[in-house]
Image (cartoon, rainbow, N blue to C red):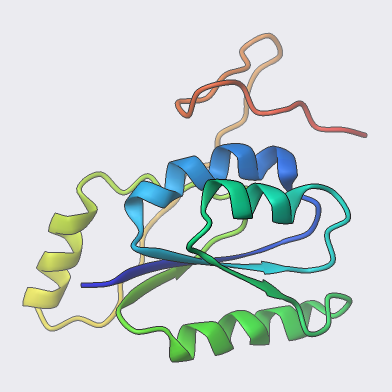
Length: 137
């Protein structure tokens, strides 16, 4: 039961510093599609997840092309996979049990609900370690 996470990034070094350590233990593999980052995003991926695939987007200016590239990766990737942005964190509980249950039922996919988390001023912090950086204007 291979598990792969796929994401696309554009100058996400601050989020990737939290996102990668959170997701790396959940997945056997990852694919990061870089959409023209000019910050340290690629270096962070190489440092924290050196075995993951780091691809360069074919056309970072067109969101439809980025979506197609994600779908192309999904098509050739065996096993379970999920596509997330760097701002989305998967909180799966017991992922092994969930996927085993889906497979036992003969299901090929699943849908889940999400949570939107908004911090109040002065309440910074995450369950992932250090606080995420404040949004820049």
